[in-house]
Length: 184
Image 1 (spheres, rainbow, N blue to C red):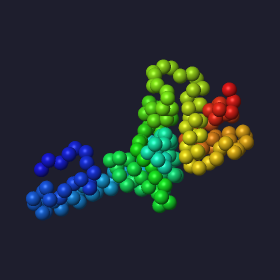
Image 2: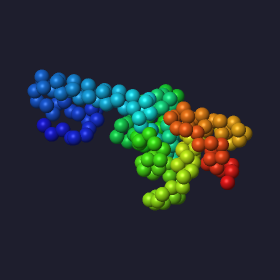
Image 3: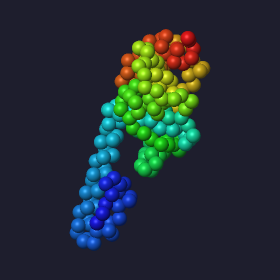
Image 4: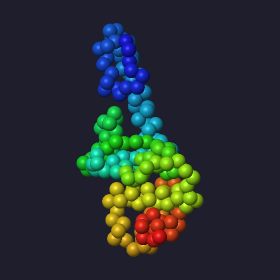
């Protein structure tokens, strides 16, 4: 028997194991481990030990942060491709998991504008906070919040509250407004 190192239970063919008793035991263990892995994954998302990124609604969408309370509504339908669907029909594509910090390398890569090139350099002191605010703006937009219709005060409050609810400090009104392109 030659099982791959990393596989999904659906890829496991119990008929590859000739002994019926051994087959039943292995199948039970595979199901147990897979269930445990899914439980640990959900727990990590709920406890904000990781951040979920996905292309929301279309495979052509840019990556956006998916908040834990939103991700709870989705069921992963294809673990290999990273697809998920909510009961409402909404879909996530190319799901990625990264460290919870918005300024981690994986997070920066997933959130970068397609026109930017990735360079390694020291960021300006306010750059990380501005990136966090931009990530919050993208997440709120993906959640259907029409930020452009809000006053500056309402806009700042929504972004600030999202950041605080997701474990970050609010960077302040000026940083949020710069991230939104409403101030230079």
